[in-house]
Structure formats: C-alpha cells, structure tokens
Image 1 (tube, helix red, strand yellow):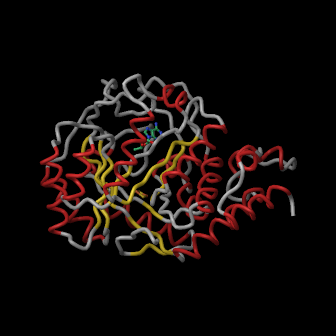
Image 2 (cartoon, helix red, strand yellow; image 1 turned 180 degrees about the vertical axis):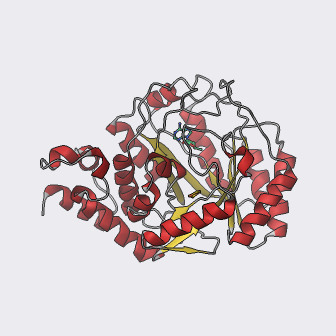
Length: 364
Ligand code: 5AD
Ligand code: FES
C-alpha cells in the first residue's frame, strides 16, 4: 500500500493523524501524483488518487448514518449586516447591494411551505442585523416551535452576547451555526476588519456549547492567504471544540468586495477536507454546501460521496434569493422551494443516498 493510503487507513482507524501526515494528505498535487495527467475538468470524479480517501470516508459515514441524508430548509431572512468581512458580499461596505428583511409572517410562510415539503429543520440565517431585537427573534423561534413541534430550529446569525444566545435557546432554538472561518489569528485579521477577532468568535462558540446548543462551526477552503498550516489549525480547533456540525465550502470570489481579484478555492481540496473531517468526526453532521454546488455543477453529489450527509435546499422567497449574495453566481436563485427540493432529492439519489424526513439530530 502506498504511503498516502497508509495514512488514510490510519486516520480511519484512529480518527487522528499527525500534522505532517495531514499536510501530506492536503498537499499532494493530483497532477504530480499522476503524471499520466488529466485535464482540470476530469480531476475530481475519476481521480484515483483521492478515491481511496473518499471510499474510507463513505464507509465511516455509512457505519453511523447509513445512506440517510438530512435536509435543512434554509431561510435567509435578512441581508443587512453590520460587519464588513472582506470576503463576503453582504458586508455593510457593499453599497451596490439592495437590502431586504423578511417579516415574522413571511418567515412563517417559508416554514409552512417547507414543512409541507417534508423539512423538519429550519435554518434561520442572516447577516448581523440589529433590527431584529432579541424579543422579535424569540417570538419567531417560539412561533415556529409551537406551529411545528416536530421540527428543529437552527440559528445562523453571527456573534451575539451570551444572554441573547441563552434567550434564543430558552425560546426553543436547538442548534447554532457559527463558522470560525480560520483558526489562525493572523489569517483571521487578513479576512476581517480590526473590529473583529478570532478570540471573540471562539468565545461565542464556547458559550453556545455551554448553553446546550448543538453547535456547528467550520471554515472556507481556499480563502485568500490560506496556507496548509492554517487548515491544520482549523482541524485542530475543531478537534478541541467537538462540534456536532461542521460546515465547509470553497471560498468564492464576490465582485463587490475587497477580495474581488482573489482566486476562488478549489473543488478538489474542499472534497479532500470533507473526507478528512468525516474520518476524524464519524458522527458529525456535515453539509454538501451551496458553495460546493456553485463551484461545480455536481459539487454537492461529490461532497456526499466524500462524506457529507446533509443538504440545505433554499426555502427563502424566490424574489430575495439573489440579494442574499455571499459570493458570485450562487445557484438556486431562480427556483421555487419545491423545485430546489426536487432537484436536490434527484441529486442525492443519483449519488446513491436517500433523503429522509426527520429532524436529523446528531447521533451520539
Ligand atoms: N465564499 C464562500 N463562502 C462565503 N461565506 C461568506 N462569504 C463567502 C464567500 N465569498 C461563508 C462564510 C459564512 C457563511 C455563512 O458563508 O463562511 O460563515
Ligand atoms: Fe436548488 Fe438545485 S438545489 S435548484
């Protein structure tokens, strides 16, 4: 067995490997390793180099979750944001973007549609928008939980004080997504303005854990200035945090941000990281993200085969989807919720898995 595959087997067995072994897995160049060369376009699907890695990840995933894929209805309820992260299209400094907010009633309409479609988790995602005070958010959360007691509510609304997180939890929120983005201080400052800090981000994540949320964290792959050592730190931080959910996706350029001239991340490296994370965190809920589906037409199918077990169809009203523009060329902006669900279901089946109607909680 070659060295690379030995490392992968070790990772599958021990759920861990050393930094240098991680670097070796992350850095192997597909073209170098296969001098019989391939074109860019055919790299992923038939790459025998990563096949062994993806097969190990798939085996581990099937051991815990079988072929089940969980569905989360994503409601992007506001694209106002007080932050100014350099990579993100809804940063407050982007004056080219027209802004929207969904009312409590509009959010409830999304949930009604989603529930009929079989979604049992609703993800309320938005920019950091102080327009929604804690009492409004709590009212929305308890509305959803009262009307749909069989559903989980996931929040993805950024950094908040402990008391706010506690209030949302007491109102019925079950889960919280907050990517750490990068676990390296210096790199963090290259992606965010002075006013933001990794320390604060981490503190929020620990607070969420303490309060009792199922917590999701993660990072962008191929973000500007990212090095292998940063990715290793990201993985080590996740090992420390032990999140129930891990979200990663390629960085994608947005033309109206300071990073407009930066290259997007790659499909291949994202898939590799998905598989590595599955091997390290056999029980984690890991989505095949919209960003992955944006960078490649079959990105999400490949993500599922590399260890992902969650998909997040868009449930936002079609009129606002283009405006929730984190990056350019976002998919699903012209589709109705039902089409998105159908489209994803076909993709899940074609990849060899089964979309299930359930809350899809973390399996301890
Ligand atoms: N490319 C890819 N992902 C992005 N996000 C924000 N901007 C971009 C971008 N340009 C991700 C961040 C954030 C999540 C909601 O979207 O990781 O946490
Ligand atoms: Fe939205 Fe395919 S998942 S159109």
